[in-house]
Image (cartoon, rainbow, N blue to C red; front, side, top):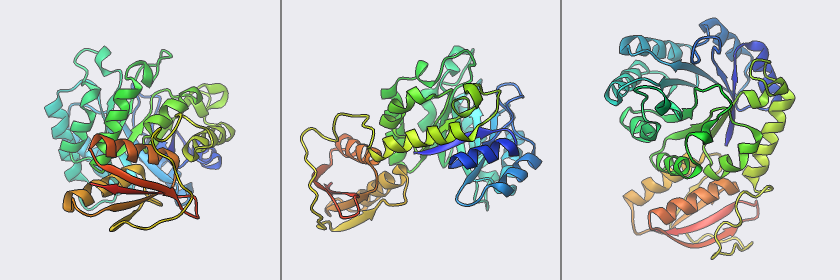
Length: 330
């Protein structure tokens, strides 16, 4: 899981980077329902963000104007944003789909990733677009990934509107299609166990990493560092969020290499690992696949994906580097 921190200016971006954020997401919280930052603000943030820190842009809740939104997305591409998020609240599914397809076309020739976004609390608003349609919309809209966020500012958060089990199913489905997955919405340290079990590629926060936990007080690097450390403890397995990987399976410490095909997941997001597995099995249903997984949370996801798709886990062992190697039979 990567840590995304929402920032409004260069000062906050510096705090987020100092604290260890993987992604600085530039937005304007002063506009209703979250809006876009000024282009010059993003340029300034991008200048001070060193590799491999990603700089992303949020458009917030976009208007029902396809051309206007596509133009804004095109501008994000010209600014060389790592990604641009396009959010829908009051909208018909077909219109949202039309908008995303126009955005995809507007990014032609750009390296900027297109991220579709729905809000977990959409259904409390009249004509709100159902967030359970997120994966379908992202796939049909030719997005590179999705974000589920919230709009309410009354103390409720993501898990007050969508349960862990539903979010987990959506994340696994999206990962199998090669989509990046991101969750946000007033998330706190106390939500980290649930987030770790869901294991999105990206966790987005603001209030949890601000002074006194107040999103209006500004991002503080020590709070970012603490949140990132807690996330890493769960990612590495030092803090357990499940009782066991598989109650019927023991992990050996002896290294093996018996797969006909090897998929090296080191340096890949979990969506990249599962998408590579799905693509390999789609092409070849006979070969045994050995997959190398660098952390515990991604191991859970691969095992769950294999179980859901009726693939057999033949063996799983740790190599000398501490990576888990799984033998999988389609």
